[in-house]
Image: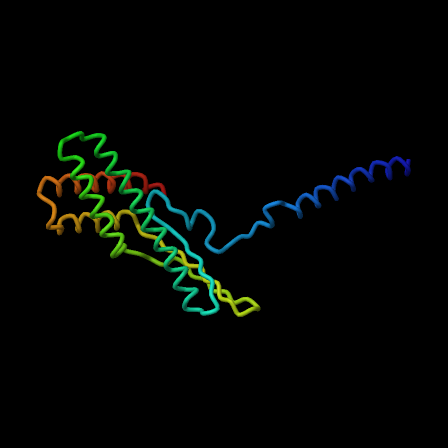
Length: 188
Protein backbone atom coordinates (compact mmCIF):
# COMPACT_ATOMS: atom_id res chain seq x y z
CA UNK A 1 0.00 0.00 0.00
CA UNK A 2 2.86 2.42 0.79
CA UNK A 3 4.34 1.79 -2.65
CA UNK A 4 0.98 2.72 -4.23
CA UNK A 5 0.82 5.98 -2.20
CA UNK A 6 4.36 6.85 -3.20
CA UNK A 7 3.56 5.99 -6.82
CA UNK A 8 0.53 8.37 -6.76
CA UNK A 9 2.49 11.10 -4.96
CA UNK A 10 5.17 11.32 -7.67
CA UNK A 11 2.82 12.44 -10.53
CA UNK A 12 1.23 15.00 -8.19
CA UNK A 13 4.63 16.48 -7.33
CA UNK A 14 5.64 16.56 -10.99
CA UNK A 15 2.40 18.38 -11.89
CA UNK A 16 2.91 20.89 -9.07
CA UNK A 17 6.49 21.58 -10.16
CA UNK A 18 5.42 21.96 -13.79
CA UNK A 19 2.71 24.47 -12.85
CA UNK A 20 5.19 26.42 -10.69
CA UNK A 21 7.70 26.50 -13.55
CA UNK A 22 5.05 27.79 -15.98
CA UNK A 23 4.05 30.49 -13.53
CA UNK A 24 7.54 31.87 -13.07
CA UNK A 25 8.50 31.79 -16.77
CA UNK A 26 5.63 33.83 -18.18
CA UNK A 27 6.76 35.49 -21.42
CA UNK A 28 5.26 38.81 -20.25
CA UNK A 29 6.96 38.74 -16.87
CA UNK A 30 5.46 39.18 -13.44
CA UNK A 31 2.24 41.19 -13.10
CA UNK A 32 2.76 44.44 -11.19
CA UNK A 33 -0.01 46.18 -9.29
CA UNK A 34 0.45 49.94 -9.44
CA UNK A 35 -1.26 52.49 -7.21
CA UNK A 36 -4.70 53.78 -8.21
CA UNK A 37 -5.84 50.56 -9.87
CA UNK A 38 -9.47 49.52 -9.90
CA UNK A 39 -12.92 50.94 -10.52
CA UNK A 40 -12.48 53.85 -8.11
CA UNK A 41 -9.88 55.30 -10.48
CA UNK A 42 -11.60 54.58 -13.82
CA UNK A 43 -14.02 56.83 -15.69
CA UNK A 44 -17.68 56.12 -15.04
CA UNK A 45 -21.14 57.43 -15.84
CA UNK A 46 -20.54 60.40 -13.53
CA UNK A 47 -16.80 61.04 -13.68
CA UNK A 48 -13.94 61.43 -16.09
CA UNK A 49 -10.92 59.94 -14.29
CA UNK A 50 -7.27 59.52 -15.19
CA UNK A 51 -3.98 58.67 -13.59
CA UNK A 52 -0.40 59.53 -14.42
CA UNK A 53 3.03 58.19 -13.56
CA UNK A 54 6.32 60.06 -13.62
CA UNK A 55 9.91 58.91 -13.01
CA UNK A 56 12.96 61.06 -12.40
CA UNK A 57 15.93 61.56 -10.11
CA UNK A 58 14.38 64.96 -9.34
CA UNK A 59 11.23 64.76 -7.21
CA UNK A 60 9.57 67.82 -8.79
CA UNK A 61 10.20 66.59 -12.33
CA UNK A 62 8.70 63.18 -11.47
CA UNK A 63 5.64 64.90 -10.00
CA UNK A 64 5.27 67.22 -13.02
CA UNK A 65 5.50 64.27 -15.43
CA UNK A 66 2.77 62.37 -13.55
CA UNK A 67 0.60 65.49 -13.34
CA UNK A 68 0.96 66.24 -17.05
CA UNK A 69 0.23 62.65 -18.10
CA UNK A 70 -2.95 62.46 -15.98
CA UNK A 71 -4.25 65.84 -17.20
CA UNK A 72 -3.50 64.96 -20.83
CA UNK A 73 -5.45 61.70 -20.47
CA UNK A 74 -8.41 63.59 -18.95
CA UNK A 75 -8.42 66.18 -21.71
CA UNK A 76 -8.39 63.41 -24.34
CA UNK A 77 -11.36 61.71 -22.68
CA UNK A 78 -13.36 64.95 -22.61
CA UNK A 79 -12.51 65.81 -26.21
CA UNK A 80 -13.29 62.28 -27.42
CA UNK A 81 -16.67 62.28 -25.65
CA UNK A 82 -17.55 65.68 -27.11
CA UNK A 83 -16.61 64.48 -30.60
CA UNK A 84 -19.07 61.60 -30.18
CA UNK A 85 -21.75 64.08 -29.05
CA UNK A 86 -21.23 66.34 -32.06
CA UNK A 87 -21.18 63.39 -34.47
CA UNK A 88 -24.48 62.19 -33.00
CA UNK A 89 -25.91 65.69 -33.37
CA UNK A 90 -24.88 65.83 -37.02
CA UNK A 91 -26.42 62.44 -37.65
CA UNK A 92 -29.71 63.42 -35.99
CA UNK A 93 -29.90 66.95 -37.40
CA UNK A 94 -28.91 66.92 -41.03
CA UNK A 95 -29.18 70.64 -41.63
CA UNK A 96 -27.10 72.90 -43.81
CA UNK A 97 -25.62 74.60 -40.75
CA UNK A 98 -25.09 71.30 -38.89
CA UNK A 99 -21.49 70.84 -39.91
CA UNK A 100 -20.73 74.48 -39.14
CA UNK A 101 -22.18 74.01 -35.65
CA UNK A 102 -20.17 70.80 -35.33
CA UNK A 103 -16.93 72.62 -36.24
CA UNK A 104 -17.64 75.45 -33.80
CA UNK A 105 -18.57 73.05 -31.00
CA UNK A 106 -15.41 71.01 -31.49
CA UNK A 107 -13.41 74.23 -31.59
CA UNK A 108 -14.99 75.28 -28.29
CA UNK A 109 -14.13 71.90 -26.76
CA UNK A 110 -10.49 72.15 -27.89
CA UNK A 111 -10.30 75.68 -26.53
CA UNK A 112 -11.66 74.60 -23.15
CA UNK A 113 -9.52 71.48 -22.81
CA UNK A 114 -6.40 73.30 -23.98
CA UNK A 115 -6.77 76.09 -21.47
CA UNK A 116 -8.56 74.69 -18.46
CA UNK A 117 -10.38 71.64 -17.27
CA UNK A 118 -13.30 72.55 -15.04
CA UNK A 119 -13.50 71.31 -11.46
CA UNK A 120 -10.38 69.15 -11.56
CA UNK A 121 -9.91 67.23 -8.30
CA UNK A 122 -6.84 65.30 -7.25
CA UNK A 123 -8.05 62.00 -5.79
CA UNK A 124 -4.67 60.52 -5.01
CA UNK A 125 -0.93 61.04 -5.02
CA UNK A 126 1.79 58.59 -4.01
CA UNK A 127 5.54 59.08 -4.12
CA UNK A 128 8.28 56.43 -4.03
CA UNK A 129 12.07 56.66 -3.84
CA UNK A 130 14.07 53.58 -4.88
CA UNK A 131 17.56 52.53 -3.78
CA UNK A 132 19.18 54.28 -6.78
CA UNK A 133 17.67 57.64 -5.79
CA UNK A 134 14.98 57.68 -8.47
CA UNK A 135 11.53 59.06 -7.64
CA UNK A 136 8.33 57.57 -9.00
CA UNK A 137 5.17 59.61 -8.52
CA UNK A 138 1.60 58.51 -9.22
CA UNK A 139 -1.24 61.04 -9.43
CA UNK A 140 -4.96 60.45 -10.01
CA UNK A 141 -7.53 63.11 -10.99
CA UNK A 142 -11.24 63.21 -11.59
CA UNK A 143 -13.74 65.66 -13.06
CA UNK A 144 -17.42 65.36 -12.35
CA UNK A 145 -19.04 65.20 -15.80
CA UNK A 146 -21.96 67.34 -14.66
CA UNK A 147 -19.59 70.16 -13.64
CA UNK A 148 -17.60 69.87 -16.86
CA UNK A 149 -20.73 70.08 -19.01
CA UNK A 150 -22.01 73.07 -17.04
CA UNK A 151 -18.66 74.78 -17.54
CA UNK A 152 -18.84 74.08 -21.30
CA UNK A 153 -22.34 75.53 -21.39
CA UNK A 154 -21.14 78.74 -19.68
CA UNK A 155 -18.26 78.96 -22.16
CA UNK A 156 -20.67 78.56 -25.09
CA UNK A 157 -22.84 81.39 -23.73
CA UNK A 158 -19.78 83.64 -23.48
CA UNK A 159 -18.35 82.76 -26.89
CA UNK A 160 -18.75 85.80 -29.14
CA UNK A 161 -17.93 83.74 -32.27
CA UNK A 162 -21.26 81.89 -32.05
CA UNK A 163 -24.52 83.20 -33.42
CA UNK A 164 -27.77 82.55 -31.53
CA UNK A 165 -28.73 79.40 -33.49
CA UNK A 166 -25.28 77.85 -33.00
CA UNK A 167 -25.28 78.74 -29.32
CA UNK A 168 -28.71 77.15 -28.86
CA UNK A 169 -27.68 73.98 -30.72
CA UNK A 170 -24.54 73.64 -28.58
CA UNK A 171 -26.49 74.26 -25.38
CA UNK A 172 -29.03 71.62 -26.44
CA UNK A 173 -26.24 69.09 -27.01
CA UNK A 174 -24.75 69.84 -23.60
CA UNK A 175 -28.18 69.70 -21.92
CA UNK A 176 -28.71 66.25 -23.42
CA UNK A 177 -25.38 65.08 -21.98
CA UNK A 178 -26.24 66.62 -18.60
CA UNK A 179 -29.52 64.73 -18.63
CA UNK A 180 -27.69 61.44 -19.34
CA UNK A 181 -25.24 62.05 -16.50
CA UNK A 182 -28.05 62.74 -14.05
CA UNK A 183 -30.00 59.64 -15.15
CA UNK A 184 -27.03 57.26 -15.28
CA UNK A 185 -25.36 58.62 -12.19
CA UNK A 186 -28.21 57.89 -9.79
CA UNK A 187 -27.01 54.33 -9.26
CA UNK A 188 -23.44 55.28 -8.30
